[in-house]
Image 1 (cartoon, rainbow, N blue to C red):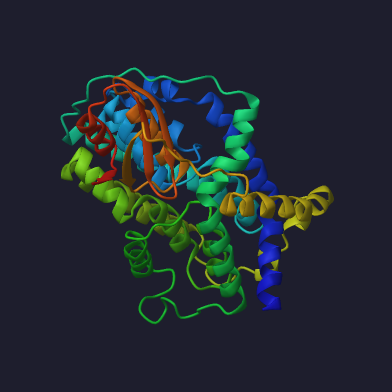
Image 2 (cartoon, one colour; image 1 turned 90 degrees about the horizontal axis):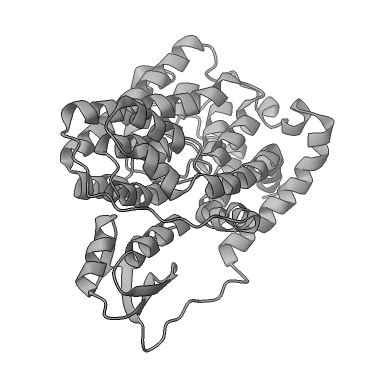
Amino acid sequence: MYDILNAYWDFLNKFSPFLLLGFMIAGLLHGFVNDKFIQKNLLGNKFINILKATLIGIPLPLCSCGVIPVAMSLYKKGASRASTTSFLISTPQTGIDSIMVTYGLFLPVLPVFILLRPIAALVAGLFGGILVNFFDNNETAEVEECTHENKSLKDMLRYGLITLPQDIAKPLLVGILFASIIAISPPQDLFSNYVSPGGFGELVTILVFSIPLYVCATASIPIAVVLVGKGTISIGGALIFLMAGPVTNMATISTIYKVLGKKIVAIYLFSVTSVALLFGYGINYYYPNLQGTIDWEELMRGMHDHSWILAILAPICSVIIIIILLNAIFKPFAKKIKGTDLDTKINVSGMTCNHCKQSVSNAISSINNVNNVKIDLDSGDVFISGGEINIEEVYNSVEKIGFKIIK
């Protein structure tokens, strides 16, 4: 147990300064990259719109569950299918928080890996959008104007240090725990009994394993880095896991199928899997001797590889990150949302994060006579206040962005 706790603390010290910085930058992005800005750049079928959708999606801290309602809402507001698909592919693969954690964990042993994740997300997003543009008629929905209130610095910090951590706290803490256990007792023969380590068969196996899973882009990094460090999987296999895991899961696939159709689902899956295999095979080809040669102590040396200032700050940042994550899980200051006898109450299934909650709130708020929407994320209860509200219109608006009404 002591060894696991020690490994856990080493992991936190390794990336906590970068994660904390990522949270704060994410808060700033939340304030400046708003719905109106995204909609403006996703409208249209030209290559520049697909490129913008991909570039906007890469730094946004949206997980695969959170990106679905955001993308579906933007599609409803007029974004093309090509731009929507590009946004769906590039966004959950990496965000500013996961980019910073990747930097902290992979810099000592493979600096090029830091660039590969966003580049792979860019290529996959562009490839998917171009294919949709070529094979699909790119019909867009009727354009609805996005509304957005300017965010204050307080709102930005609240999002970066409270709202965003609520979406990734549990998977991140569990991911670090799994990584710590693997560090102490690695499963050396996880894939090697079935396929050649570092070979194409290993890459395909990891890809098939990753497609139905839901893993957070940030939380999956400690698991990937320890599996590489212990020689359990190749660096190419780790890249495939980090690409396919956050992007392809059953919830995402079923929602895309429902809203955009089976043709888009096929293009979506083909784009992600083919680019993941290409990049995974490519990095194994150019680094053939990396498999099983990374020194675990070198991986975990962390703060000494950067500067003595970071070595001092790392434990402080680790304590701050633990406080932020525990606050996100237990929400000691959060009040349970309740409605009144005058409210229309419905229950929405599928909301798993604050981005889901906000998308549902925006969808319902756009309906005539709706004055206020209050949502309890834990229970899925939604309280709608206003005048004479068309409940069927409420149902349709929620289901159009990928959620289910429990009647």
